[in-house]
Image (cartoon, rainbow, N blue to C red; front, side, top):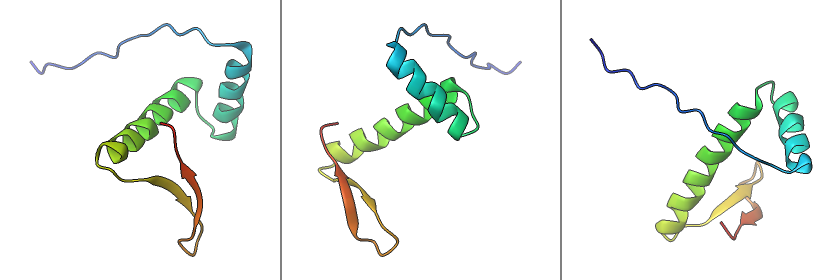
Length: 73
């Protein structure tokens, strides 16, 4: 019998403003608030790993010009 990992349920308290933002992002992305949070954690993981490797995280335009550097993570 395969050892399948079961999802872990978490309870999270957020401000009404953050909840509204989560709802807006979920609607805009055609997903759930949980999926928005999973994607946010995945993005944070990428940023954290980049920081550990002394790299930088940024947003580039179509010409690969830096528009915004993400700092403070």
